[in-house]
Image (cartoon, rainbow, N blue to C red; front, side, top):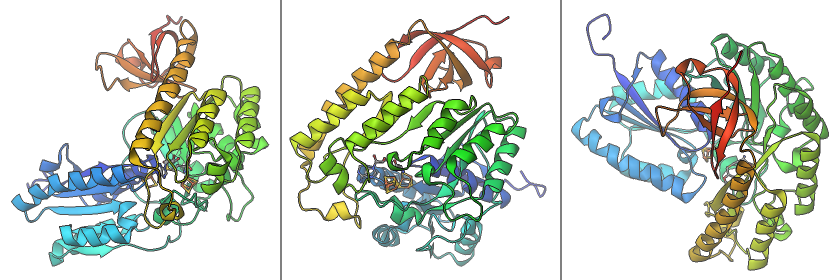
Length: 446
Ligand code: SAH
Ligand code: SF4
Ligand code: F3S
């Protein structure tokens, strides 16, 4: 209730996609709360429903359209309901055309999130759909309000956009050119997070290794990591994503030598065949990648190396796929996200005529998963009996009587213990390891 005794209007955000979107949704929440809205637990209770969408694969888009169909039922019941649609899908002309037909109230893009309050008000006043998507990125917007998920770990954007144009990827089209935030703004945000009780930050960018280009000062990602690690109260610094072509010696040394920086590098290989890597426009070879990951393993004791892998890229023959499996066996990823190639309109690879049939992609994905899951299980089982330092995050999502925690290497460890362990860094003994998680027992501390 507000002071006039009226019910406070509520908003609900449905978020899809990567950590960037999770972070953007926190900003959308901040903007809506500054307008006087409060968060609703379910869409039925909201007068503004927001979709923050992802277009990285066809399946991601389908999920959004499915949910939009469900929500449209609410709109029929309540014509004053505002449905707002933002994120990566909103940047695409074919999606905008479809949204015009479906009839949503507000469409905004990834470059004009800050305009959201104004666009919602406009739609409420005019009772007509408001479409406002910028084709190009503007300057980096600082000082927007944001409502972060309560907890002990927070995401911090350090850069936006991507210049790499991997031939399969829509992100450079939906997020614009690469631009870095100033180190002063980033460190100020990390300090504020520490003051609010967060103990861990994850620095976010599509390619964090190229951080700093275009800034007035000379600063690179290794410098920024070291600065973030110095912030008092922040015990762990993580980062994602690293591009194999831009991983410097200095960065490896910084990760190796700084105890606050976690020894986990997400460095997507995508494919194991040099011919496919070249067609993907990735800018490295399998030999380079192997040499890089071997070097990281030598120099950063206990480092976890994780990857993204795509099967069925256009022109991928059995030999090429065998090269991916071979790399998976050689590198032994601690974890990997695996995907079937999905053609994205407007990208170069979507034009290639030698698309791989769906059945072949499916078969390759399950073959790859079998191998990757086995390797991850072997690595995790080898940890049984060992002691790991974990940061306790909160109640486990699957079993509320347990707690979930994370090792420095980003492995989830399910433990039994009291809630006052949340936010603490404690040693645990690993009792069991499977492909995706570990179980551990809390060790007595004196
Ligand atoms: N910037 C990050 C991740 C971007 S998207 C990086 O460069 O690694 C996350 C992952 O989605 C990619 O690493 C890739 O494996 C996958 N992906 C991107 N486009 C895809 C497509 N068209 N089909 C299938 N997977 C795709
Ligand atoms: Fe996409 Fe490649 Fe940029 Fe990653 S580096 S966001 S895969 S274009
Ligand atoms: Fe992220 Fe999906 Fe956009 S992966 S950058 S939300 S296309």
